[in-house]
Amino acid sequence: MRDQPTWRIPIGLLALTLGLTVYAVLIARYVPEWIGGWHAIFQTVVYLFLGLVWLLPLGRFLRWMETGRTK
Picture 1 (tube, one colour):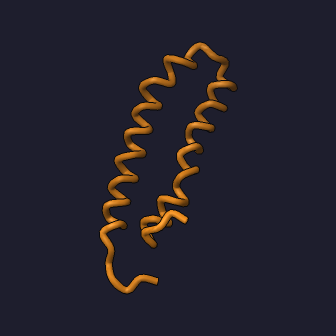
Picture 2 (cartoon, one colour):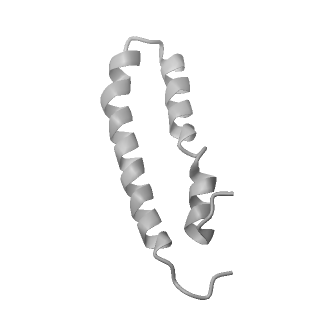
Picture 3 (tube, helix red, strand yellow):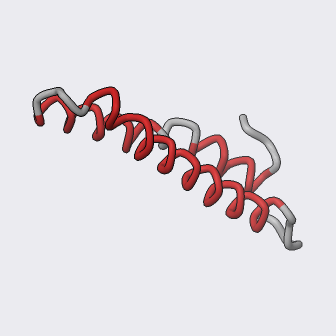
């Protein structure tokens, strides 16, 4: 448990917000060009996958924000 405020939390929140915004804009800009002609079921699977894949590094990132370590 930390007793003092740390710079990692506000910087981490800003980085997370910026990173997710860039990720969402890239997905919204480029993915429809690639899968626009596909059947709606396959498009749904791709968008579900892309909507969840950003969660993979989130645990380590949040751990770093709290402790300063990734492991």
